[in-house]
Length: 324
Image (cartoon, rainbow, N blue to C red):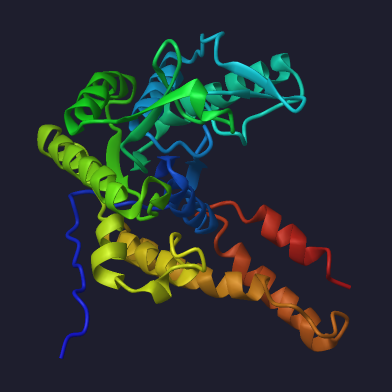
């Protein structure tokens, strides 16, 4: 008897290896996948703009990165002696406006350089709701806890999302002709909009993403949303807030991602690397014992075998400093 509807994902015509470079951008789920790629030693840049939930702001920042410039003077605000910018997450902040300018320019420049050589861009969309700063009615990425009277709330239509992406797409294609784009819808629910309106919002995203994958042959979809909502489909896979996936759920989605996009050789390497990670996380009861010193030397030897695949210098240094 089957007690769940397991989702099978077909490979979409490309595979990833440790020679691949991957940029993730968008909602907090982009950070989850990005950090897992980083932990697995992929060349990755994770959410360079901070967490960005709405499609319009995200596509605009990608275009800024291609142009390697950010020109808006009007979106800087000061709050509690800290400077923020409406186009970026609050993680990107500074004590002075000039310092924030420098941070933004550095982040845009870093994204430009990475995007130019990237093999894959993973975009995770979080919500169809946007907030527009009054009176200009320009979409903001983050309200930075300003009063609601400063903004108007608007539910995007799927065609508006498709149009915004379609405007950014030719620039992405010209900037990096070999770039593949993988779209996902975040499985994190935005229940502040109410559960029913969250469903409306996610549905709009899903329709827009479907239309984009039909429109562009090198734009793909990874069903993270369906894996959470239809495959796992149980509150035991949610954290205490009943909104965010547990680490078990995140690992399950990561496994599905790995099965779909990683070559067999890459999956084999990751299996070996997972054993190394367990060894690196090992806490010694007696660090000076002969047994632990042998364990350290053995682990260093195992690490050295990965040198031709990716950098393990930091891990080796961390172990070597405990050798007696």
